[in-house]
Amino acid sequence: MFKEELKLVPEKPGSYQMYDKNDIIIYVGKAKNLKKRLSSYFRGTHTGKTQMMIDNIAYFKYIVTNTELESFILEINLIKKYNPKYNILLKDDKSYPYIEYTRKPYPSLKVVRYLKVKKHKDKVLFGPYVNAYAARRIVSLINRLYPLKKCEGMPKEVCLYYHIHECLGYCTKNVPIEKIDAMEDEILSFLRGNEDIIKNKLKEKISYYSENMNYEMALDLKKELDYMTVVLEKQKVELQPNENLDVINYVFANGFIAIEFLFIRNGKLIGESHEITPVTDDYLSEIESYIALFYQKREIPKVILIPDEIDESTIKEVLDANFLKVTKGSKYKLLNMAKENADINLQNNFKRIEQNLERTHGANDELSALLGIGIKRIDIFDNAHLFGTFAVSGMVVYVDGVPDKSKYRKYKVHTDKNDDYHTMKEVIYRRYYHALIDKDAPELILVDGGISQIHAAKEVLEEMNLNIKVCGLVKNDKHRTNDLLDGDTLEIYNIDKTSNLFHYLTRMQDEVHRFTITYHRQIRSKGSIQSVLDGIDGIGDKRRKELIKRFGSVKKMSEASIDELKEVLPENIALELHEYLQERK
Image (cartoon, rainbow, N blue to C red):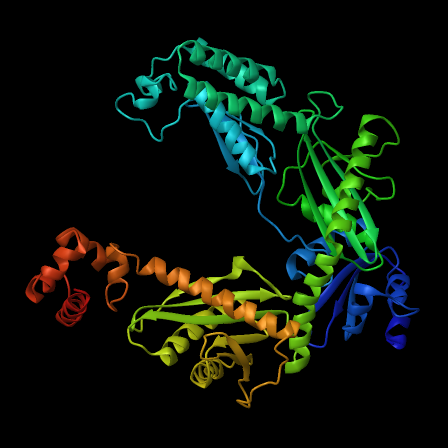
């Protein structure tokens, strides 16, 4: 296999890309020696994910670089750009929460999320906190114990917080700087690891409320003290109070890799992150790439603790961090703790993940084989309306068998009649007009419905010269997924109702229905003037604001005459709105 092509590959460093028969990049790798690395895929026997990938390779390409570092950087950029199916990818790209203390213009404390941490002279960040609930609870407690600024904006008069002694009255602008300094010192000292400050303050408050027979408040603070004691006890590790580092370790078994990250801040373990995924046989290379990707949108600590077998030389050029390897002491214990957690996660979740891969990637591969096309992305559409009004449509997206919620889209439909055909035409046009520009078209479109919706979608796609496979998901009389209808032949595929593929189709249809109905309910929520007016074609933001300003409520609008409505709207739209409001009575 590829015997002649491999003869031409140079023995130089570079990045290589594996393509499937649909010209989609399914894997990106790097190598010190491209010839040796690529040849290793096509000789001998392989198992698991490696063999699955090899079975799907139609051809490969490569880019020669001057150094191994250049090949590593290129690999990272290509993975970020193409999200190849067989690379380890970050499943959760959300940022972790931080506790942010702001000094100016007034002292305040809150939980924030930043995609990229930026230093600011008047702000101090603590974290990241993987447990967002714990971060919010700590901020809430400190705000109760200290008179920080809590309200938004700058009121003209002091508010309730001032009167209950939870604010110094910053709106009066005459707060002594000494009080702010003393309060700030205690708060920052606690967040940097001096837990006794808050514990002692809680004990004083509990004693005060008990002596004054306010037992309810005393009990409430006692619960906070107990919670803090448990949380801080869990965080204790044998490190210096001011140490900040991340600990990384892994376990590789049965073709799966479990990677564990432990976050140490101010000498305390504040959280962890882990990933379990099948990998190719060059798992160390994939771990190095994953580490580089992991810190693209996260705080990079000054020290990252890693096991000896991970080669940090190239990662150091990408990440501004000191990679540390140890063989004894408290840090070595942390390294072993990370490995133990990775092992536990792998043992506990191996079967579940293996089954989930079969339900997702496996089912997606089954669908590809059934339709005779390579499928990476699927767009699924559903429509909803109420007696022809409040028409909306929703689109959900599945990539490699799993939902990608960042790509979900909602559509307010201009058609105000019970007309699924024209609704589908409008939404398909709006979605794939942008696809022509952004070049993010799927391999398959699934429409919730039968022949009419298929014809509508195909008609628009043909007008736009887009060659995308369309199929319909047909429900039975109990409104459950029943059949897959081919958009070209209009024949029904024979699918085993107990198979992973059938359950995969059902999950997609249920998800798009849930997403669309939720949006539809928001649009037609009771008492919302905007929701009512969204059902009328010809009423945009400007006219909606004029109607609200003129009438103030739906009730008064429905009581208005056509002549009164014509003072704001053109006659034809005024007639339509009047008729619609009368039907609603």
